[in-house]
Length: 468
Ligand code: NDP
Image (spheres, rainbow, N blue to C red):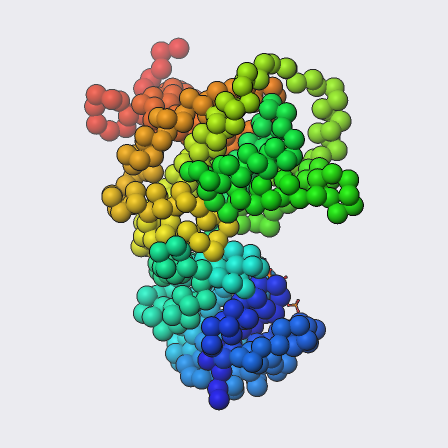
């Protein structure tokens, strides 16, 4: 009996996805270009529906037509090299799916290249880490809707399902839309995590809470409007005991955070399209700053933070930080979804923003209760210009903004770095302010470079002969 599909790349994500697909009753051929990972899969992951191959030739011959081949390898050159290796075997109508974190520009190039050979190609974003891959990730598919209809059911079957039973997998839009949606998802994840880290810093430093108390606070947040995977695992990470028996593990983790590049790509995409992603930019910068741990530590000894009174009541601090986080979350998603809206027009992706929020509801790292409210906002108004204009989020901002400002001022006075939250407030204020000082910028540009400006009372651009 022939295999239904194949998967190339038996690393962490590839093996887990292959097992997930096999569990759903599909017969899957698996292959890796180095023998070691095929051996490992055979030894550790034997499954009646998964057939390992050491030879690409034999793997391809084992497939039903049209052949569906999933590539799950390191993004970049590895994907091109797998596609090159596949080309001699590919026939008209075969389907190649790249499920790694490929850059969307590469996906566009590969889409065109394979389309010229009559091969269907789709860039697919997958979120949820290794656990998600094994038991149900969120899946964002690009390419064409016509092609999606040929393989979409498999991906829907293996995806996470939200509480209403809907699969967290959908056709996102044309061309590289799947990888674009995944890239911005990761950018939002950067902002989301940095906001959590900033709240942790505020609660720990200004509230003086112990790790156990902090874990309880995040557990309580996870029962309210902030309910999300990241808030839940924050509580778990905070209460984890050090395996060496010296208190909590969190206190032994070096204060340096790395990044693999999707945050940077999102920031670049924001500049390309002309959308303010200041919170994602700040989250990337915060990770850069975290890298200079030695210098930071030296300076911290010379520079004493100004000590100000914290809030008199610990309960008030906990509540205000919850509202502070909520404001940050609204702003982060407002920025990310603004990029989706503008990129969709620029690149003809034809994205459905409500649908994006819907498939983020389970399986992925940023899954949150809050996403239901985003879906509802776009259902109420599919052409919503920004999330902060939706009546629900408008009301929430009114309720929570004062607390967010109070906590930010407190952090600033205590020299606690909370850059993403400052950017959130600057974004919300900027987006709700009729004068942001750009009139003076235009005056200066015209003064030194005759760049012209528009008047409020006349049409058209003009240069002024400045009198001094
Ligand atoms: P791993 O490093 O575990 O696996 C990488 C895979 O790529 C291995 O099978 C490796 O084979 C293969 N590979 C590397 N170079 C080549 C090459 N030149 N030709 C052919 N195959 C090659 O990575 P992950 O499984 O974690 O990630 C795979 C993809 O999934 C990446 O794009 C990643 O960004 C994305 N992703 C990862 C997530 C995660 O949480 N880990 C979440 C969502 C997406 P070998 O080891 O034999 O070299």
